Length: 196
Image 1: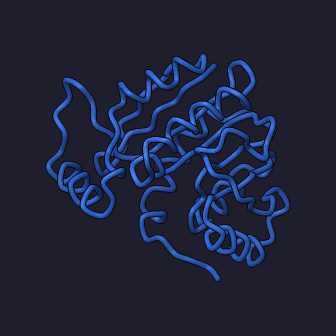
Image 2 (image 1 turned 135 degrees about the horizontal axis):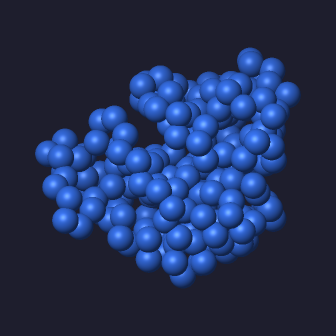
Image 3 (image 1 turned 30 degrees about the vertical axis):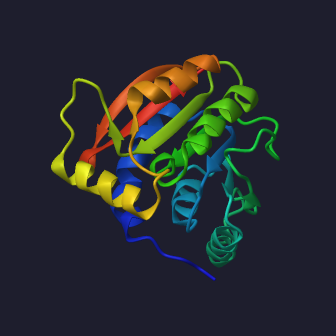
């Protein structure tokens, strides 16, 4: 059954604009936490020369991705697979890029730790890890809306919440990844690009 996330229609074009500058011309893009699957459809359609591999740790999300995929019939969109970012072993051994949209704040810290560790394992030198979402930053004022969002996430689950960019940088460095770029996005979000 297809799921729908209204935010996808608002953020897919700004994210795609950054991805255009970061993704390789060909190869396999691994999307972590594909959620509804709407981003996967849009991005696979945007880059027909890239194979797009959607994943999610939730079986119902995987079903939603595949329902969107069946409806759109994109040859470069692979069937979604179950992948828990926090797992020490992923069902994918190599990727030419990893994209993760709006996951690290609605998951426990172990998911972000696993994401960076997994990126360190599967990405070739120079390949990008692209993270999008709301973050906190040292020496940068956080918008009131992001602070309220952070508080609401923590009310839902004490392990959820906006993560500090500096913490993500630290996790990345442990895996041989360096932040190559920080892009300010609409609605107080950021896109962070890491490369090996």
